[in-house]
Length: 327
Ligand code: XMP
Image (cartoon, rainbow, N blue to C red; front, side, top):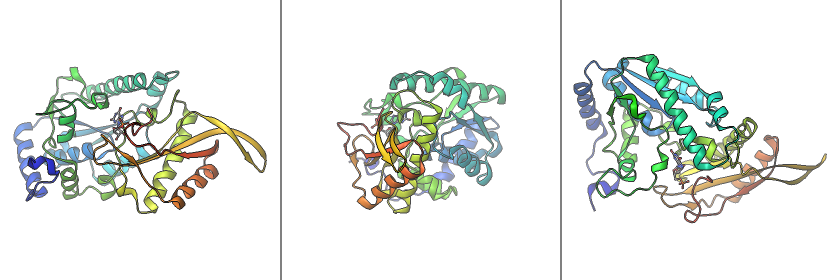
């Protein structure tokens, strides 16, 4: 077993790593200007924080609101990275652009392609406005290199997972300060840099966002319904103290209507699916054995609090044969 297989190397010290990287980044970048795309996830956050520690104001971070994010996400990013960490942050509201391009699109891979292309366009436009950029900072970590087929012994597992990836014709030099690290080490570096625990332990969220959690066409109504249901799932799992034991937990909108009944009479509205999985690396996963009382609370809150939902189902399929996301 190589030292990388353990995910955390004995004697490895995040403070020493930060010191070494800060010096290396300063030496490499000089007075150059850098840009970084923030996704709200752990890796890009830690990469940006590390580069900010090294070169401060020379770094601008860009956050694109594509309209496919979870409830409160744009406000969360502004608060965490702008107000709390004091980063140079540009938030781009591109919701209408993405939703217009996605209108009428139902095929999962087509959705992914459109979102990927549009992201690069928005990112390039913003980079153009800043001007004079030299480097693009990316939160690539060691397992990403293995999975995208670049590293020694690499396998091609998820080449389609590169949404938010590198705009190819930007002619920027690439700076990847976490490329030697495993996830656990990235978290330790983030903690030493003062990033909040809540951020460092966030579940992964796919680049195409809620677009791959709404089966079929993406509509504003579907998005807003799914956001509310998803927020309830995450909130209740956190309240039950199970968030860190679970790899990912979220709601999906299968686009399915079924018959229900209330005191006022018959309904014919949406079904919401709940997905919660345990996993080590997302290559395989098992459905989480959530306590029945927790499932009951989630179900009753969703049907009571989210208008337009009369049925909640729990996905009890491992990966394989299912995938974690529904699309
Ligand atoms: P699946 O659904 O393939 O997901 O079992 C495995 C892991 O990858 C995430 N995922 C994506 N991430 N772009 C991303 O950035 C994508 O298109 C994408 N599709 C799936 C998924 O959330 C899970 O963590």
